[in-house]
Image 1 (cartoon, helix red, strand yellow):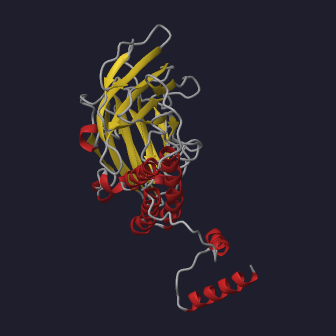
Image 2 (tube, rainbow, N blue to C red; image 1 turned 135 degrees about the vertical axis):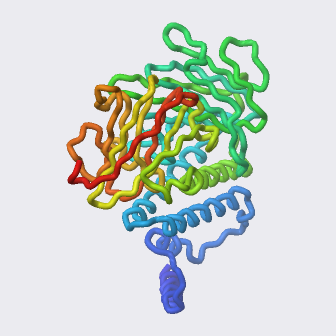
Image 3 (cartoon, helix red, strand yellow; image 1 turned 60 degrees about the vertical axis):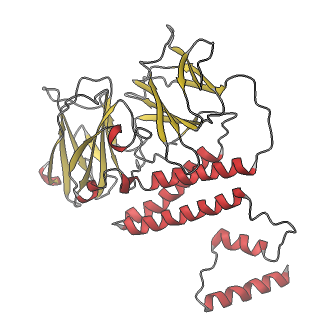
Amino acid sequence: MFKQLILALVILAVGVALGQQLPRGAALFSWLTNLGSSSSADYSQLKSHQALLNLEQMIAQTRELVLTDARTEQEAVEGMRWVLRLVAQVSELAGDSNPALPHFQRMDTQKRKLGGDNPDAEYEHAWIDGRYDYIITGNVGSVRYLGFTINAGQGMAPRRNVAYISDRMLSKDAEGNFTLILAKQKPAIEGDWVEIPEDASGILVRQYIADRSKEVLPTLNIKVLGESIPLAAPRDEAIAAQIDGAAFAMLKLSTLHRTILPELMDEPNGFIRATSDKFGDDIAGTDNLYMLGSYQLADDEALRIRVQPPQTRYWNIAVESRWHELVDYVHRPISRTLENVVYAPDGSVEFVIAHEDPGHPNWLYTSKHNFGFITLRWLDGKNEDVPMPELEKLLFRDL
């Protein structure tokens, strides 16, 4: 061990002298620990190992993306944490997936809310495989909306929406219990049937909440329909597919600000009307009318927004960072629903986006970002003629 340590110090000294990039921190300790170790077997050509190398490259490219696209030090700093949270989310979802023994996995935590998700919602995801049929049972709870988006496309292939069903389409009993069957052919059992293709890959569940203190989340259970599949040791191809899935999800999430209405970065303080038809119903709510906007404010400025909400069972507004991250969404006023705003006598609502609390009842906090995105979701408003928001930028002291 002493000889290994001397050799390591010599290598480090030579590397520093030559200006080479050397391991740091825990990576340096791991490198020193493995110095001189060897194995008689070569597993480097395993598909799972090659997939992990690709994921490592995806992480490095995302780090470079942050350095390229950040416009302030705060964005760069939060961007590094965002990369870490991206890795955590995609590895948790994809790395723990098993379509033969599926489960619904919550996508966010109290600190992690990525990808422009609705902060007044909970999202669950289950990985499936078109080789199997599935049965989902549960109760719709008392949330304002429950929706299932069934996607297809595996590996690095683009995802596509192959089916959608909402709480209003489900056959429910008096207590709100339901059975949803995903199968290639209609089975001879009771329940709502959704046909799935051979490359079916996942189920995204949206649960919109207007008042967390009163509403009860749905209960969801999923299993393969038919006989239980025998347990077996994981195969190289299966683990590689999980890692590839994580890399694909990271690619999708890390580039949203470049791919979803990128003109909002060049034309701030305005909104664009959009639906899932515009930017993909594999990631967008099929029933929603979206109004996506952005703000660009100096330290002494604020943005006043006035909206005229439609008659709908749910809507909300949220502000996001450049990375489409909902920063500290549990503890900061970065979003509001139809249940926690103050309305004007004519039914309209005025919001103020500002770096400090102006004493306005509908204040939305920027989290000290000079730039950010704004998302309005109008449920069941896809075909409604909802007026576009009115915006006014002004000095904070003039509010």
